Length: 321
Image (cartoon, rainbow, N blue to C red; front, side):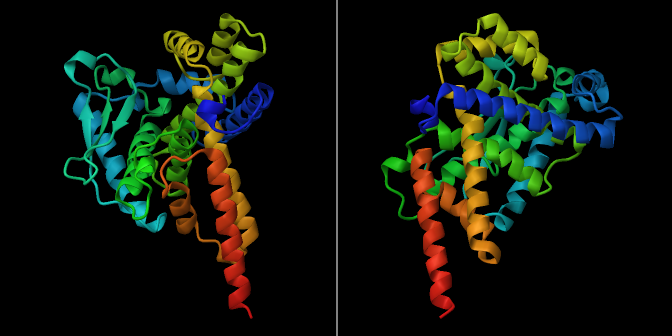
């Protein structure tokens, strides 16, 4: 846990956090269900959205256009949420033929000087099987703006970053930031519709389930089948997808818990800064502080934000004399 999460948390603490977060996420799903889909029952809501062909795509080209529109909207919005926005471009690419049946998406950085762009690659093999309620738009924000592409190039283009930290990656802040970015995209009004916001929550529910089942299997006596059953009952993922994920968690203990744990730490630090600084809190500065040093450990981030808050308070006190 410590290697990936970069915080000293017990398996029990992580497990209980997952249970709490799952209930919170389901409450938000119920609100969307009431507002837009005529049901408050989460399983019914997810089944209804998955079964509606109107929430899927018709062609690979439509998937690419949808993703590009999301990236363009997000890139345009970044100056409202960050003081420093890197210049490096991000290119969108469907998976090559040898990966054409692969789902999901991933990000790869380009040249440090921006001469070649970062790339967001994603699946387009079966458009009608790609349902927007499954989180495709949220994943696009996760991998590009304000997620991994933004995060990587703030460190690569920023001044004063230690050379090692330009290339150093830890999951706690690295994946925690990208998941936080899915929420930030919602705060910025970037999602196309409620079905895409439901997809964001579906993504988050998947990350909450990881907090439950990973320590459940490795420390709390859960069987593989208990972990499979929990994820099937609480997420929109298929049985095959869940079984593949469970194999991943068995093979790499702790890594999958870093996403939501890191996001929750960032959210907590933001609330701490807002409470301490009041009207003087600057969200753009906060975001800059979080990612300007690369993916440091979460304990280092906590110390950094604490020091930043203290410096801001001291500045306020000096200005008030």
